[in-house]
Amino acid sequence: MITIGIDDTDSEEGLCTTYLAAVMMERLEKVGKIRGWPKLIRLNPCVQFKTRGNAAVAFSLETERLEEAKKIALTTLMELSDFSGLNTNPGLVVVEEHSDDLVSDLAQFYRRALNEILEIEEAKGILDEHDLWYKGFKNGRGLIGALASIGAPLPDYTYELLTYRYPERWETLRSIDEESVWKADKITYPKTWDTVDHHNRMVVFAPHSPDPVLFGIRGDDPEALGVALGMIRSESWKRKVLYRTNQGTDAHINEAEIFEVVEDRSYRLRGIVSEAPRAIEGGHLFFELGSKNGSDNGNLNGTESGCSITCAAFEPTKNFRDLIRKLIPGDVIDVYGAIKKSTLNLEKLEILDLARQTKMVAPLCPECGKRMKSAGRNQGYRCKRCKTKAEAKEAVILERNLDLGFYEVPPCARRHLSKPLVRMKEEKVHPSR
Image 1 (tube, rainbow, N blue to C red):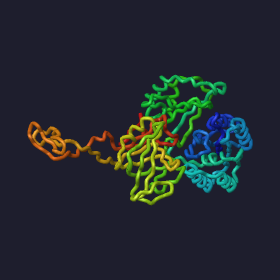
Image 2 (image 1 turned 90 degrees about the vertical axis):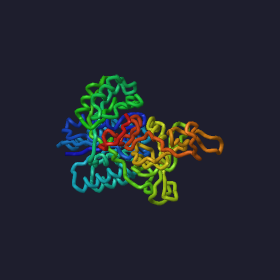
Image 3 (image 1 turned 180 degrees about the vertical axis):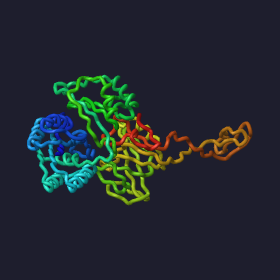
Image 4 (image 1 turned 120 degrees about the vertical axis):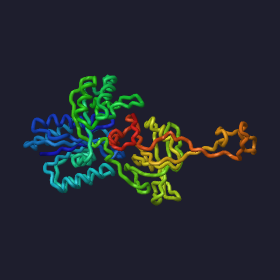
């Protein structure tokens, strides 16, 4: 049994690593048998070198014709990689024997690839240490994802059923009957999710780029994905592959204190809203999240009580910003997202405690219970009916119109790795649909 890992074969202009893997698996059936689920692995979403989704693929092949399998894999990679892309640096790795040391090293390497910006030499070090067969092209950066995808243990996982177009249609608009997509979502949700965006009335399971993917159906139940596929009317597809994946698992999220965060990693941070949300041109919203623990850090804003970080809900998060506008100083929340340019880009949040919001109003008459009226400048308040008086306004607690619990960005803005609330077991969730 061998395992093959592939990464960094597509470009901003087109092609797709999952498509290349689909064709490769098809061709390798001539010399062996694909075993188990092929893995579609998303890595650190902050990597600046990624082309689109930062995905790598790995799969296992049972074969006694090892050299032929390597030749087919390499030929397919050479044929279906876009070597013209500036950030396209294909990597192909074949693991023949999975020793305990190798499995441990690759699992650790995968976890780092989820959270760090790794160097190519680190991947080559593992390849050479374990004497693995590999081919890297251009600067060889794809070897990082190829190794990480092989090593991903997937303690939590979901599925994606990807369909692929006929090559002659790649440069044309996709033909998908949207009504059938909405019906498929209605029948299969919550076993499938992120097929449509209810609030924004959008179908979101199909890309818009000129690549080979027609659409991808995500979910937790392979049978439900098959039901949805059978309901969707579209142009004919040439092939399909069901991948097991780390998408929708929050595998990239690390728990930390605000003062501990570093650039290009993703976190769950607990803090207190310290400034009211502010908007800038373009519809983007920002607010400050403060912590009473920790110390100042060069990436953060120091405060007397500890430190703070800026959180952002950008315009593409659409209706999620309506929630952000309701936050006030004193609210205690957990935020989830990636740190870019000293700012946490929000993926979801949990409201843990709401600050009391008060307003000064005319006092109530103790006799009739109605609001008193002003008696004139600097003359206090009085009830004309009961003749009662009061010297000043009183504070009343305002209804926040906001519940404790989890809130998420809509499907149209969801990152691949971010866990949708439909997959979370907590009782207090407020899904975007």
